[in-house]
Amino acid sequence: MRVRDFLLLVTVCLIWGFSNVVSKIVVSDWHVPPLFFAAARFAIVIAATARWLLPMPRPAWRIVAIGLLMGGGNFALLFLGLQTASPSAAAVVIQIGVPFTTLLSVVILHERIHWRRGLGIALTLAGVLLVVWRPGGVAISGGLLYIVACAFAGSLGAILMKQMSDVPPLRFQAWVGLTSFLPLALASAAFETGQWSTSVAAGWPFVAALLFAALLVSVFAHTAYYGLIGRYEANMIAPLTLMTPLSTMAFGVAMTGDHLDARMIAGAALALGGVLIVALRRKRATEVLVMSERP
Image (cartoon, rainbow, N blue to C red; front, side, top):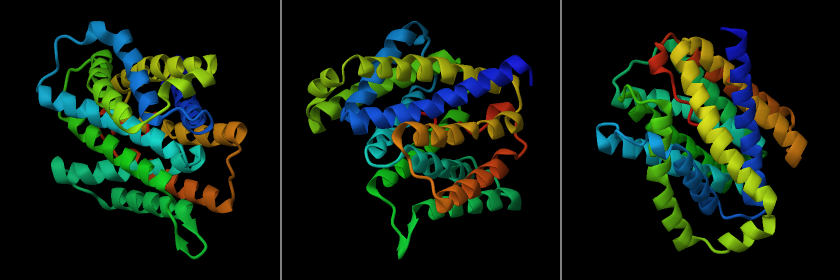
């Protein structure tokens, strides 16, 4: 990999990790309603990418489903989870999306799981269970349940995305924004209160966080990642993206005071090791897992 591209990938992973922690601050510390935050984010994405909407990718139903799963559904569940879950715990638990994607590929795409991928899935699940384990048994919080649902939505969207071809990254981003904004806005209007008052109270830092999430994360980082996937093999790119959960944990400790104990570290090591085993399987670049945990 060229040095410039490696540094670009490092930057992308750092942006994703930082975004997870910023999102935690927005929905937890500033109390901005999560559905409203997601809707506002995608409104900006639409404005930035509207020129790439046409021609519409075909089949239409699939691009709409992908947009809802990997956009509105994924981010709404992520932000709901981050209201109560720590960024570090969420960064580990969301790795369950990789086994989800693998298992869904068996059911929908009729792929086969060899023993190495099975081992990776088992290690990932063991790591996630260790993170949510408490004395007396497993005690997964409501926030982490949202994170698990977020991972499943992103994984299903990734499988549907594998069945599409020749969709430029910016066109994909444009349709994710378009299909996500209206459902999120309606859901926020129906189920949330205090959208404007909490946003105004947060002030310019909220505006900066919103622009960061929409422009740097969605438009720049995701587009750059898809470009790298097009230039390099999956078994080179996928392991390097494990920098994202590691950077999330580091930023979480530094910015939100996340507590890391031996159990959390061991669980993270198991989960990330399992993801690495799954990711290192030989696949064409176009068949790479679209990592559902992208913020």
